[in-house]
Image 1 (cartoon, one colour):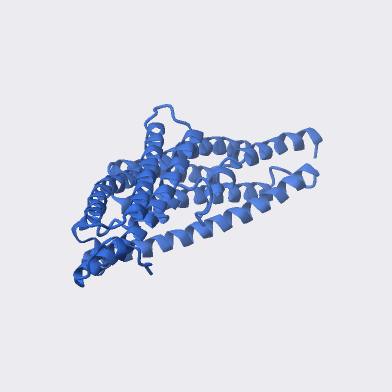
Image 2 (image 1 turned 90 degrees about the horizontal axis):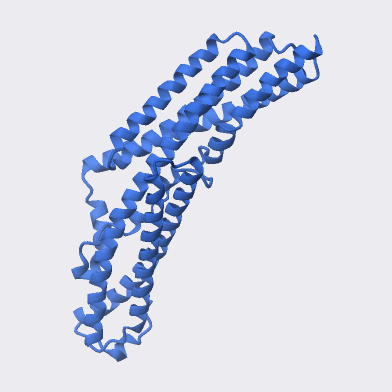
Length: 343
């Protein structure tokens, strides 16, 4: 084998490896099927502090029973709703299993591909041999399958969220999946490393657009849900303020409650600001993938603020429940009774 020929084909292998490092092995692997990664748009659908109190917030007139109402509402979910949730969980489990399978398949194919590259570099294997071509094709196919599985996962989350513009987002993802499937067919028909390099470049372009679409779609869906929750939170904070003021008029020392309410409002305001920061990025026509990551980080921070606000809210309801229980038992609620230690 001539050295120049080996180096020429090795260059093809290097191009394939370099380009694919920007695909599942790089950008996608950072948001793999385990959904633990700083860039995973789907973790928002899994991390759901919004649901920690959304049920029951409309019944502030009976603050002491709000948490029990939320539990009762959960029990009273219609059969249709329960079935929908069950079907979603089953479908999601299957998609996750497929994603794990394709991730493992991709990792194994990449390992074999690197071994082939090393043998070519050592001039122990012809780059155009069946063994070399088969290893490259397997690597490409497993990469594309991993991408498609990832997009299917995003699509499933969008379908379940049923947010605004969901149908358009799903159509966009379906289009990207079809393009990737077409490229996968080209891999099978390729007969040289040069042809495979052309496929890789095409796949890279499709994936970059698909990644942008999936990140934007998932981010906008989560932002929408955050917005719905924050709107309810603003109404709730007003009702809480009225409740605390009533206790204060009855002689209760509400200093601690007022401090908690102020903290709750502060966290909600912070969550709103971060949501708006994310939205401004999503709405930018020239947004980049790096910008998307920044926007998704804003959403994560917003969700974190909401989680902290909900913790304060639960503490407040424990205290409010105590005061209403005292009132129901005919016990006068005053500054003295307010000093009792709450369990």
